[in-house]
Length: 202
Length: 202
DNA sequence: AATGCGTGCAAGTGCTTGCTTGCATTCTAG
DNA sequence: CTAGAATGCAAGCAAGCACTTGCACGCATT
Image (tube, rainbow over all chains, first blue to last red; front, side, top):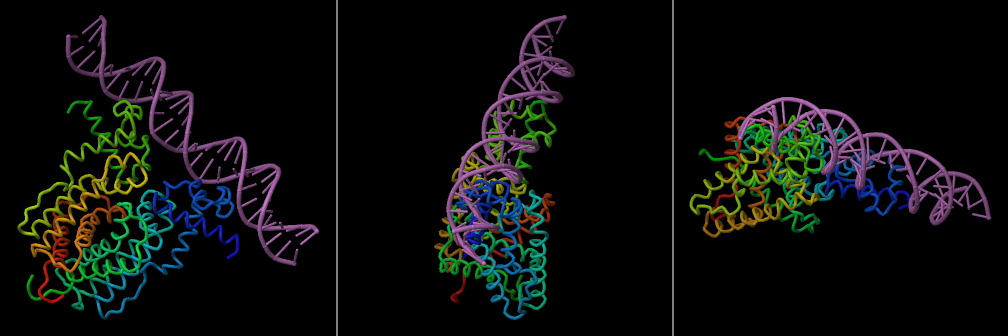
């Protein structure tokens, strides 16, 4: 890795950590520079703005996350397996970026540049998820006595809360893969047991 | 209501709304004054600090929420009814304060005065909830193949996400009581169906 | 009528923030 | 070895922040 791409790397990593910890507005360019081990001026020479750093981070997200579940065409077969795969990819990508994406979603309400970066992505994701839930309900793969948007919200809650809870509680360190896998499996198991199609009762 | 207590009221309400929308650090005293329809100086004459406003808000929380489920002695009888009551009180209190409590929990990580206000309250709440889950597991009132802290986290996720999701998506208006009741019931129903004790299989 | 008290208004202080400028230094490619 | 690019360093600037001060006004109680 060349020296120049290394500083870019360090800057973006530091910015990601700090955005996750303190949000966009709460992160100063001086703090980013310090954590990256770089002079503050270098930030502005490499990216033109603080917003420029955010933009570069967003592009990196888009590369690695490949759409954050948007436009995913789910295999209409095994609902449980589909949910497990979905939960796993969402949670592990959220853990990878240290919760920055979730934290930034909060900031979008008040920070215009964050709102512009995310656009209507989260909203479209939820709508797509609800649409998928409705589809599975029609196919008999999910219980039908709960509204699809409630099912979608609950699923979103389960997956996002894993990271969110640790952000709130201060347990920010990334857990080893096995513990994460176990918890995700238990969460999906819990969700699936509740969301599976009912018998004739209730 | 006397004129003086009215201004105090308006200030605290404005501060609560703004803290919920933008967080503590993101809320300026000017913005609070403007929304309260009050001169900025009045803020500092009534409460000594910006932190003083936060403290006063916290005391009001404590009065109305009466401990935010901490120290609650659950009736060991009907688990489902207990969960429904718990979810309802948590969600409706969160809706009442406009999500300020949840948003402030995020700020606690980085803003010392917020951390001091909340103390270890959230953490103790979660531990108490997990302990209750474990107790119900032992009594055969909850499935035992999922760790109690996962059960507790999932329940926390379900209840907090209702408000959290609307904060992120921008749908901040308080819903009418009936719609809230229905959604909460469906959420608890979903959770309970998944968390109820199993038969002999898995 | 007089005395406080709560409030508004205007101005200002010291600090932090994002961002810039000018210059010296190091690194690297040809 | 040398030219150009990347980086560091010191200093500073305008704006926004929490917070203060001094003064004037209105309103209720006495």
